[in-house]
Length: 196
Picture 1 (cartoon, one colour):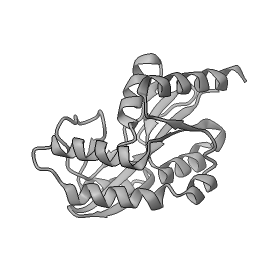
Picture 2 (tube, rainbow, N blue to C red):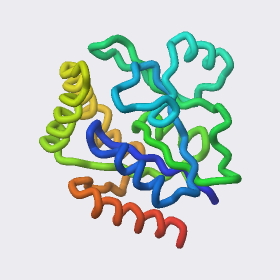
Picture 3 (tube, one colour):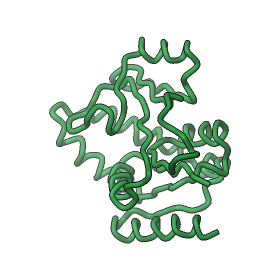
Picture 4 (cartoon, rainbow, N blue to C red):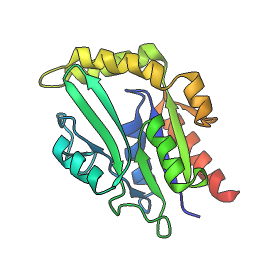
């Protein structure tokens, strides 16, 4: 049975890096590109990290009942919506999938497709190291948004609380201090899933 492998973690936990390495290791897995109304960041490309849409486009998709789940963030830069759409990207009869998302979106995908079809890959990094990674990334931006970086960091503490992780059924966690070791553990985990 094909699965949706769902990569999650607090900001700057290495989700994008793990996602890219898993795509390289498992090229047969398809990807699901989520949507957002936030502005595109330096180095991002439309259709890779996200589909970047307007709020009007989001509202139109919602009217057409194409939204699986969404969440709205009141950021220092305005309201940003992140969402998953039933837009024909997913066919579990044909392929496995890799996706990056939040705990909320993971839960919604489990409800939509069935919890036996959505496999969590939860990444953890010590908070001090995570904050340094976030700061380093923001410094590389043409117009750094430090207030938004801090808001995300604080919101993560609530969004990924131990209670929320427990309620979502997140049992296995991957420490991403060293990307090579983390990837070995994830690959072993994925192999185990298919040997059951």
